[in-house]
Every structure is written in structure tokens, then in C-alpha cells.
Amino acid sequence: MIDNEVVTRHCRELARRVHPVYRLFDVLEEAALPPDNRAALQRELSRLVDTVVSNDLPLRSARRPRPGAGSKSAAPQGPGALATLRALLQLPYPECHTALAAWMEAVAAASPSRQAMHLILEQFSRWLDEASADVRGPFLELLPILAPLLAELGDDGVRKLLETAGRMSEPADRQLFFECARAYGVTTGASVAGLCEIARPAIDWRRPEYLRRLLAAVEPEKAMETRDGRELLPALAHLSTLTASKGEAAWCRGMALILTLAEKNHSSACVAARRAAGSLRERSPEEATAYLADFARLVDTVGARIVGFGTQTLPALYRSHGIEATRAFVEAAATAAELCGVSAGQAFLEGVTAAAREALGRGTPKG
Image 1 (cartoon, one colour):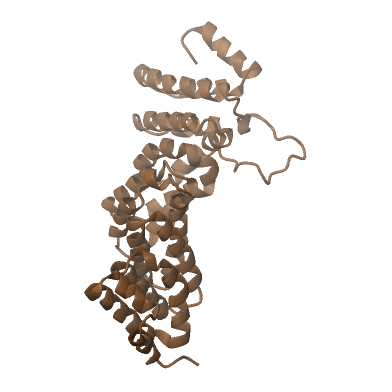
Image 2 (cartoon, rainbow, N blue to C red; image 1 turned 45 degrees about the vertical axis):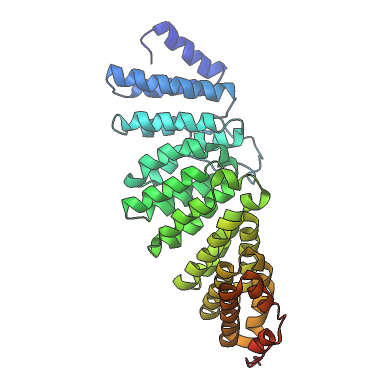
């Protein structure tokens, strides 16, 4: 294991009496490595062992579960630390050194959450197996950044991230996705999971500009300053999933609407994303696309002040007057705002004048 026989015996006794993680040094000794490579790997391994021992993290593969122990709250069982190290040592050098360093850094970065630390210790090898060759390098750089979120993000969240990155065939798309993931790594696990939901249609439909706009409109550090800011990306992800089910046009309209609002005010954007999702659930793709386009047109011309109208009154107008009449009314209000000012546009929406009331009254109510 180590050249000094006394130290070798010492570590093996520590593995029996103190913590089984010291058995990792035996695994390293079994590998056929040049002296310089072995020394570099041993430095990283020593740091990992110290982290595991100081936090008293269990090694599943070295301990039998207690009889009758429940499994509902247990972390997913991965290959275990010993098997993980054996797998890493099969990688060519220096890739195995990079992977071992990322493993160690991620476990340490997850502190003080022992749940997150143990998850990384157990699952790391499995995640690496699921990462395609093009994804592995960026993922190793990302994992220590995400480590503090792992208790919230969980094994499923990491695998969703890997699956999302793996479906990207263009290097520029993967680079942009990992740039966003690194940025939102300072936020919440729900935000990172939400990013994956937004990224899938953005890449599938070749719309990476929405990811760039997302990063600019929902600045990670600024978003963390308020509750609505923290919840904005998950709310937008829910809307993204819903609109994507109605087609590319509806998805693009929904993203444009919320990102425009986010550029103005995170709170308004979060409220609009939540309420718009509720309004869209039963709508046809045509009606959903029209509604989102009208809402966005009003935001562009009247501003964030019409969020209440857009989420409450506008859906009711669609139900009572249909698409054509409602769209004509919205366009008239937007034109009034552009020609006479935002207050005039808002007054038109509120039906302050007879002209405004008559504009919608010309429509034929449905049913």
C-alpha cells in the first residue's frame, strides 16, 4: 500500500478499528501506476479519506444494514467508495486524477450536509458512467459547485442534468447549458432542476437564445434576494413544461412573456408564470399561443402593471368573447398605449371610455 511497512500496517489497523475508508489505500496499491502518478493520486485520496473520517460518513459497501431498517428515507445505494475508486483507476491518467480530485472536492464542498456528502460518496461512479464522453469533463467541473445543493437536488436531479446535457449534439449548446448550470449552482436545487426542464425544449427546438436571455433576466445572485426571485425559475420551468406540450409556438410565446417581465421585475414574472400556467392547462394550442401573445403584447406596451389583467381578466375575455374579438380588443389597447401613453392603454383595458367598451362589445360572445 505505502512504501513504509509500518505506515501500511497502521492504515490497515485504522481500517479495522477506526473507519473502513482507510481500505481505499489498499485499492490504490493494487493499481499498476508509475510512482509519480501514484503519488498525485494518493494526495487526493488522503484528502478524501480525511473528509470522510472527520464527518464520520458511512461506507455502505463496508457495513451491513441494520435488520429491519427502513428504506424510505435512505439515500439511493450506489456502488460504494471502494468500487468507485476501482472504477476511477481504470480511467487513463490524467483523467483518473481529474475524476478523483472532483470526487474529493464535491464531497468536501457538500459539507455540512452529511446527506449530500454521503450521496456523492455513494453515487459518483454511477453518475460518471451515465455521463457521455462529451459531458464528463464539464460535469466534473460542475459537481463541486452543485455539491451544496445535492441534498435538495438528489440523485434524480443529477441524473436529469446528465440526461439533459447528453441529448445536446452541438458543443456550443452543451457549453451554454453548463454555463447556466454553473451560474444557478449558487441558487437552489429546484432552480437547477428547473433549468433542465427549460433547456430541453430550448435545445430540441434550436432556441438557445432563450437560455442566454434567461441568464441575463434572472441573475442568480439577484434572484436569491427575494422569495419570488428564488421561486421564479421553478415557476417558469412548470410553465415551460406546460407550454411545450402545446407546441413550439406556445412555448416560445410563454418564455418571451415571462422573460420580458423578469427583466422588469422578478415578483411580477413569478406571479405571471404561476397564474398563466393555471389559465393554460385546458386551452388548445391555438388559444394558448394567442393568449400568451396578447399578454406579451400588453406587457411590451403597457408594462408590468397589467399582470393582474393578463392573469385574471384576459383569460375570462377569451372564454366569453373568443379569440378573434379578444385579440382585436388587446391590439386596440396596445395601440392606444403606443400612441397616447401607457395610462391611456390601461384605461382602455379597464373600459373607462365608451369607445373602449364598444370595442369589445362588437365581439360575438361564445355559446
